[in-house]
Amino acid sequence: MQRSIFGVFTAFLCGICVLCAIPAFKKRRYGLGSLFLLNAFTNLVNTIHAFYGTLF
View 1 (cartoon, rainbow, N blue to C red):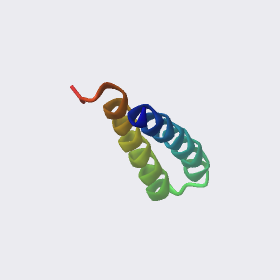
View 2 (tube, rainbow, N blue to C red; view 1 turned 120 degrees about the horizontal axis):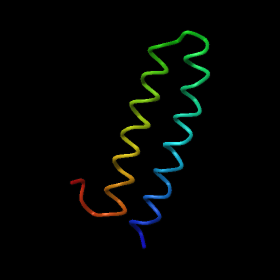
View 3 (cartoon, rainbow, N blue to C red; view 1 turned 45 degrees about the vertical axis):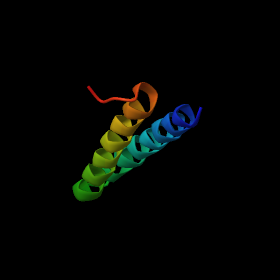
View 4 (tube, rainbow, N blue to C red; view 1 turned 135 degrees about the vertical axis):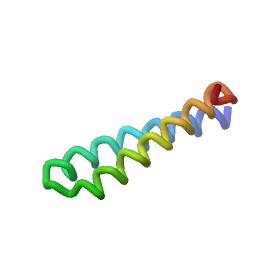
């Protein structure tokens, strides 16, 4: 149960990071946008790990 709640939470954060990266790239703040996308990728990896218990 705790793993699925953590997985949903990190998936939610992944979506928020992607939504925050879009305006950052539109305002030509490439460093901030890249940081948001890196964080989104990390959250995606954590989501996969929480749901399946393994990464590969």
